[in-house]
Length: 328
Image (tube, helix red, strand yellow):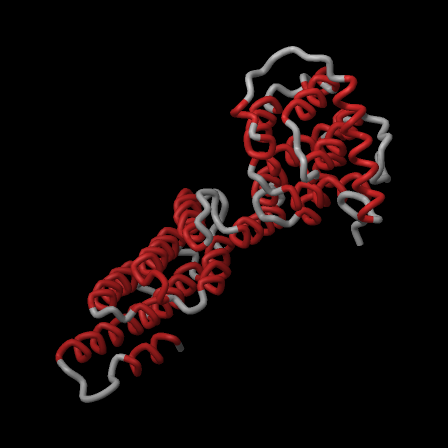
């Protein structure tokens, strides 16, 4: 067992008083677990946590806490298991860059979350802390994409498709996100809302400056949704045409804010179907088109759009492919 391995690691040479004290606590800990005295076992895990951390033995305490959290959760001691999970995160934060396999700990934390029932309040606290720590690995305030993907899969298995969609949208996995949106659309949507399901997510991904993920999500959704079943315009639904042209415009090297605004004005009736689109479009305008430099004003957009489509055709001829390609 991991606890036995940890005991061996605490005696690299002649044992001192500290290591003898740890050995005694480990012995009591094993006895508490075997007798199913989980409250006492939980307190001993915490005692060992403070002792190991004070000695800088981060690798040892991480393995001990992980073993303890699994033990608690297997016996449905959800609050205790979640608390030990939080101690794992605190240790990871203290250890910083000395953690050799951070992605392994992302997977282990997701595993612990999956073993806690959705109705347990402590699960959300563990997830929030885990997401925050994972984000520090990639300097992202929203969390590591792998953590989002793993939690999205957990939620999907539990049947919470709506919350799973939110995490898939941040997982940088457009294909999985596209297929999930299809499932949500078919299960919960009306025929006239087919375009709305994908539009919200694609705009959100673009607002987060993830154009490749947005393009993959859109292509997967359009290709495999039975009500669309194509990847190139003209689409029967105007909002899909807007998304196609917006993704193409984002991919252009010479991006013009005026063209972006003209495209939005042209499809305004479709965009007005969901008030939340405007906030995403404002962010897209700033992040891709330097929209913060321009004041919103009235203009004739027909010439601008005509030039955009000409430029788009020229780009495709030069590249010999479509903007976002096929989805296998």
